[in-house]
Image (cartoon, rainbow, N blue to C red):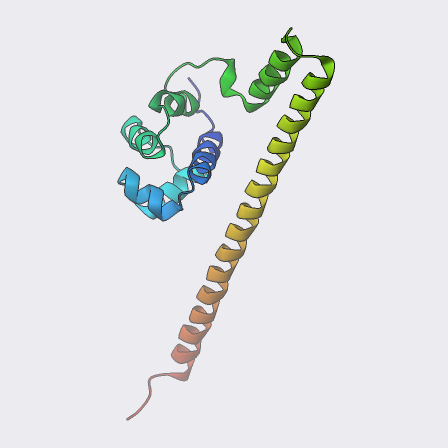
Amino acid sequence: MGALPIGPLGEYIREQRRNAQYSVRQLAQAAGVSNPYLSQIERGLRKPSAEILQQLAKALRISAETLYVRAGLLDGGADVDPDAATEKVRAAVADDPWLSARQKRALLDIYEAFRLESARDVAARDAKNDEDIDGIEDIEDEDNREIRGSAVAGPTEQ
């Protein structure tokens, strides 16, 4: 069996964390893992064990099975694919015999508006996180220049 991509799992955990209005630090503390480890999971750099997934699920108040499926530890249904889930929603609205055409259109418009709003929120948060990371790198560059500068100057005499 080949390796499974772990990026989508991390993206899903990040989305659930944001929906729960947790910072990385808060979720890490609630799940009993370190901040850097959780950050690496969210960025798809680490594949968490089943035990860690269970701790994250408990902290996020979601089903551990959902995380197991997304991690490839359990077989899941078609609803794991976000595009398939979107199509299921659209199909369910379209197939509902109790709704008029106007009501169906209104529901789908609202659904799309929520999806766009969520996508914008995620993009804005990602942009802010990128800015925060860039700021940290700038500080590290300044520190490295200061260290190199003091090494070139040599030790100070007293």
